[in-house]
Length: 323
Image (cartoon, rainbow, N blue to C red; front, top):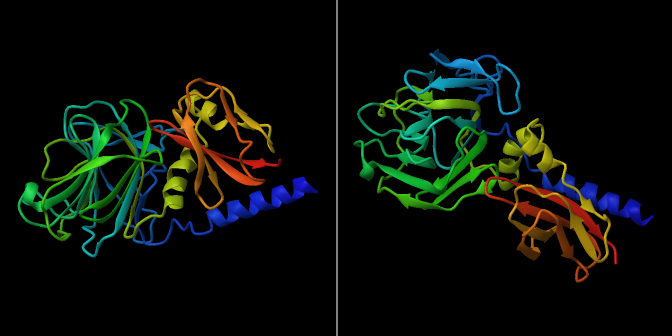
């Protein structure tokens, strides 16, 4: 009987946790690159190819992403998103093949003479930044920017997601992990131009994207924590790489448990947290070996979430305590 009760609570928690996820709401651009550059949002702003080549995506599917040569390749989007307002969100899967130039993942209203719209880019050192601009001159005084403090990996797929609420409230995530960052620029209110958006380039910048881009999504709203997690996790869970197979085969035992939980062969994680079903942290610590043992004898009966976190990824696993 106890097992059935535990199963009911686990199922109920899962339904409640993701009941607010609606990835179609205020989606104003979605380019999944399923062998073409079609925009699968309701706006249907289909891309125009400029020297991009179809390539394999992050899980090895052929012709499911586009590769950019770093010299002439970009995708023109026939819209300037003139109605865009704060907040907004952007996500994309990217693979960077080299550093050394400031290269753009997405620009919403790209013009040569002034900053307009929003820009998601990677700076020459390999740090992601998100900016919104006020339509004035090209420069520090016309933009508001957040620059992540962690460099992205080279020649490795990574899911980037950003949410911008205002000048001092921006989120940058790598593979669902929120990154610390620094703000800069003194630009004013968001101003949209009248030129085409671009993937892999911004018109004011001579540098072009080098590497691959896939699954670009653009929202005129703030994505929730659950939605940010789902956007990246949907692709991570189906990965065929050895690294991701290891991550997603991780299991907790015994489950249910009453004194100690074990997690074996942990590949890339540094810290752990145990959360209750309200999201409150009830226990946390460092992971110092590939085999984790956690004493949970102080926990009350119920359902808990074990969260393992590393530099570029995190996973959550549910377990039950039955003392």
